[in-house]
Length: 445
Ligand code: GDP
Image 1 (cartoon, rainbow, N blue to C red):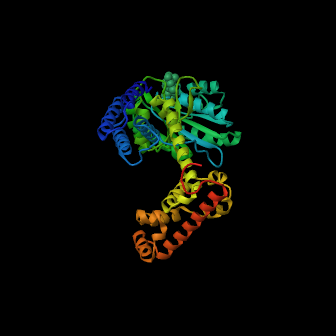
Image 2 (cartoon, rainbow, N blue to C red):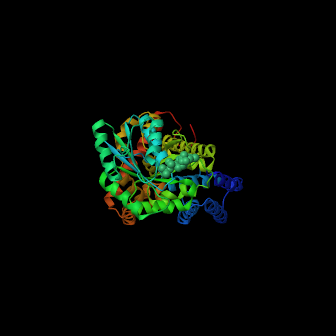
Image 3 (cartoon, rainbow, N blue to C red):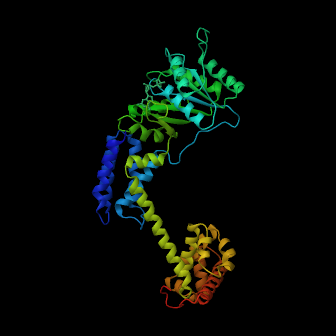
């Protein structure tokens, strides 16, 4: 799965790797290539459209990072957008507050439902649960027998109507199974329902009836990833006809192009919960959008490198700021603004504080800075002229009024800001002195 797409994408990134900077035309050309690669992988058109529009906008937009070269930047954006269309965060199973949790499986015949039932049961068992498998597929000859074989392999009990008992009502089997689970202390009930070869109103009605009778915590649609876009249409029909809360991709080990896997989240609006990757019961795991995206990009190493480059760049910025703090004499309103924004971005102030003796007294002041205050401060300082920012002594009464009007605050707020700034400036000077650092030069100590 995804091999062809991975190869195409690698080729596209390879062709821009050497470029020092990317023009808009480069970005358009690259986006066009990616679009073709996705369409060839059989990704649904609306998904491709949204994806490409996002990639273009972000690559051309203001979020361009100084830490990365152009190729890295595009890879980063494409990776993040891939994670996005695959669902973003990993979505874990919803468990009921009061056991048992009921998981209903739905999907077409041959999608891999029964196999999935066994895999899920085994996985839950490994996770400390005590599942019960329920054979509510009474349509397909031998479906009950198949589930019993799988249950045995998974080491999980199967609840099924007694042969010859005459119980032919899947809704009754499903509801009875929940009572049985309560009685025998099983905490998860997995209901395998009947599929058909195609969408069929009778099947939908039966699935709806089971749903209504059992109020499942999850209705999981099993989708055969080999089927391509058709599977996605089926998923949509099940979403509308039965209501689903999640998707499982089966047969991801196949050599299909991957379009269904990439489209289903966006088209159905429901998360992918698990991925099934083979006929063995162990070939199954929780679906992680980020891992799948980096597998599709086939560049785990490059993504690590990108992360490291960004982290290193951030470190450099922090270092620069610390140096500015140390060079207290040159401390201007511009720096004050930078500092506050960095504080807002940086999180724990403890890191810089540790590096600065005497900073303890300022701690409360720094901690009291909230985001809104920072935004107001930003607005005020931005309403000042460059000269005023460099030399706060210029800011007399009439200038204060102008600045207050420009930034939509009162004059007294401008006064408060200037007082806070002067305190900070004084402290910078004191600190530079007490640390025996050269004050005025601004050079590195
Ligand atoms: P159901 O009709 O939806 O219950 O589908 P089954 O569970 O009977 O699966 C149909 C066929 O697909 C069986 O031959 C399974 O062995 C096979 N199958 C199911 N899941 C996978 C998978 O993840 N990978 C592969 N290669 N085959 C699978």
